[in-house]
Picture (cartoon, rainbow, N blue to C red):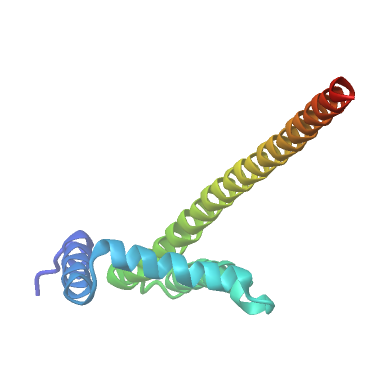
Length: 154
């Protein structure tokens, strides 16, 4: 029996996964779905959605460590099993750090938008105050002119 390298299996799996994913939704739709799911997880009042990614990442690291140690102790380590568990672990780690990066970027964008909105509100408040001052000034000038006109007519 000839064993094929793990890289070919992973590539084939990736190709099949991409084909199936593209059949149901586009890459943009998939990204939007993932982003929405992560937003819901982050805004949930419960702890489990907040901790699910770190828990899965730690679980996959523990599983990988167990498989490697078990294989070393028994002397029967199958590279396909180790490769499969390693790919699960690396996928979990990659998703965890990638999603954390996206969360931080989204948070910074939200903060920037918030600051811009606050600045716009301040600018509008200042403009409104200036308009009120201008209106008061115009009405004072108008009252003075009416008084002068009333005095001149007397």
